[in-house]
Image 1 (cartoon, rainbow, N blue to C red):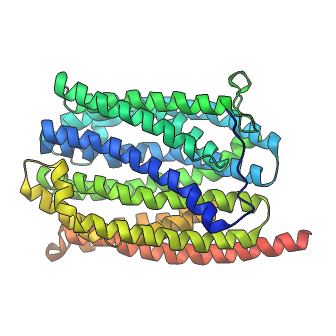
Image 2 (image 1 turned 180 degrees about the vertical axis):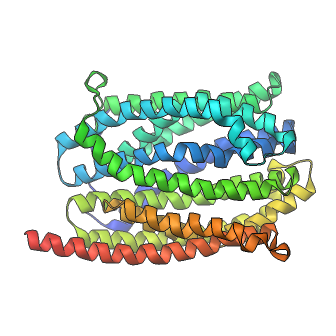
Image 3 (image 1 turned 30 degrees about the horizontal axis):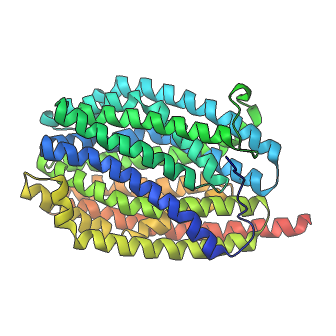
Length: 454
């Protein structure tokens, strides 16, 4: 395979960013389509309770996994910085450190997820009629989580090197396998949610094998040699310095989502079903926007490593405009076509569909604000700052939502799903305003330091 590192520090930026981002968007959307197949299959063949049971596990899974997925962010940023600075030996050491680290993270997650599934779901007030199904789904899902970690770390390395095509191809292959196995396990073997969880675990393993194989076949500094894998202390600490705050941010972000999911659960299993289906539709919009955030992170990372701060600034302007446009168009479209989209997931409850419509109105229509918030986070991380966006996001998103739930949402006349969802748009807007201000100040400081060092 003829593979080489892409140079993000030269050339026309708008074209580069768009061409770089499109495969990431397609990868994310394909991943969600395959994940949506889980909900569609159980919804059509097992009923809305099974849809709610699978959907209720999402915030819990994210809560447990986000800390370790943050390490993959650290690996990607570290690779981007080293590539931008032209340090091939550094890139090699980061790659050799990242893969065994991913494996260790996966083993830890398997133990925690399998042993703690039922306990955590009970803490979330998961309805009794969905608890058993949710627990089964989570336990099987976490049996395949090591493969998911290997894929995430591998994809982060490839994208930092400019390769967004390979993760797309691998995910397409694994996703097709996932859909086929979903239908086989649920329709033929009548396995309900256990079938879709098993299909997910198998497809994740396939994607991990493919991504590792791609790294092994590269002919640049990102080439992975299995016998040379080793956790190098300095490279591990850099991954940890960037990845740990990103992981903490993701985990604390998930805590607020778990509290919101618990609040939704209090409205009953029908509301759970509508919320789960709407959340899956939202995922397509979020994934497209988050893809722009990943592009902003890697373009900023390489140009920061090369000390080309004017290109960092241009990356910010292009990425913010790009994500706002994508988020607005996709978010409004999701709401306009909400009922036919929701009916794909839910076939036995018009009430559940109406619950989903409400969520899409309050969250999807203004979703572009979440997009620009995420891009500002990516810009800060690309500059090597991971603690600042963590603090800002924890306070502006997590802290605000928790405060909202325990104050405004508890007022009887405001105790509604509409009030609950309103906390999203307010938290996105506040957090973005602070983060983009910090980015502008930090960029100016780094540019001044770079000029003084010349």
